[in-house]
Image 1 (cartoon, rainbow, N blue to C red):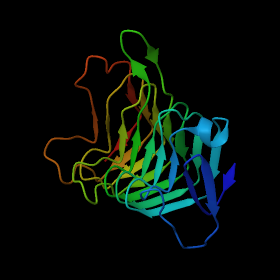
Image 2: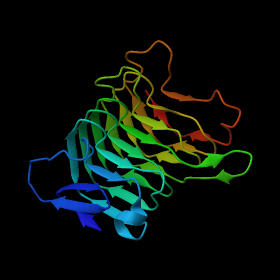
Image 3: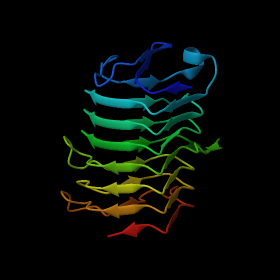
Image 4: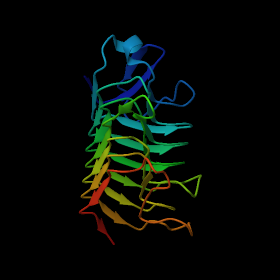
Length: 212
C-alpha cells in the first residue's frame, strides 16, 4: 500500500517522494513502471491511493504484462508525453481517478490471450474515472483504448477526444454505463465507440452508455 506523494517504481525497487507540487521524471520519463512485480515486490499486489503523476515525457504510469492485482485508486494522472496510463498484466486497473491532457491515449488497457493453445482473460479495468483531452500530440488518440480480453470499462466520463472515446479489440468485454460527449473532433473515420475488424472480437457487451 502506497499513499499520496509522487511515486516512481523502476529497476526492482520503489522510490516514494512526498514533494508537494514538485514532480521528478525518472526512468526515461515514466513515473510508475511495473514490468516485473515479482522482482520488484516478491508479491503481485500493489495499491496506490491518492497520488499525482504528471509531466512525463513518456507514459506517466506503465503496468507491464507480468503484473497482477495492481490498483490505481483516487489518483490524478495528467500532462503525459505519450499515454497517460498503460495497463497490462492481469486483474489490474484504475478507478476513481482523473486522467487528462495526454500526448497520446489517456488510458490503454491490454492483456489476455486467445490462440490455438490458450483462452485467457486479463480482467483489467477502468472504472469511475474522469478521462478527457487525449491526443495533444497525436490526433488519432483515444480516451480509453481497450485491447484487453475480459476487460471492464464502466461508469466513466469520457470527453474531448480528437477520435473515439472508446476504441479497441478483444473479446468478452463490458463497456457500460459511461457518459460520452465531445469526441471525434479531428477524425473523419471514427465513432464515439469503435470495435471490431477481427473474427475473435466477440462476446462484448456495450450497453447503457449515454452518448450526447
